[in-house]
Image (cartoon, rainbow over all chains, first blue to last red; front, top):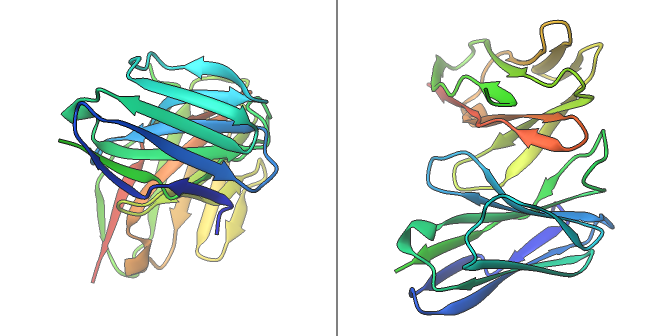
Length: 115
Length: 107
């Protein structure tokens, strides 16, 4: 519906596993974002990519590693996560990061549980 | 001080009530403003943009007050389906999301 898809929708992983979250946007946008939302908490911006270049890293631990191979795809590689990393991970895209009238469109999210 | 501040609520109102939320912002250079809606365990979705002249979409009215640096969202004739968290977004070159205001409409 929104033109932003995320896979998987649900993920359960152990603390020693390595997994990746994928986001794809079909809107022709140039900026992509990763957000974390813990239960009943506000959105926390994690990373921003604008024209494939990372422009923001909001003091995110190195166990989260983003990758943006092109303007349509964004990955979040996960390794040695902690139980407190369990959350809804949302991807969003917009025309470009610094557009004054920019609107972000969100994917459905990946609900991650770390055991 | 946060760049964008919202009353977290919760606002609990009966069906048919009128409810209003405010959102204040600190950057006077902010140029565009939006309201998003987020249902429980779902992604945020754009509800409406906020224009200087104010704008209305059915039961929803958004207003901007640049002098006092706040935007508002008014919901008339509340429905059960309006229960959600409403996020204010302010763009001063890039978008900043508020923490959200939770609305529960009860029968």
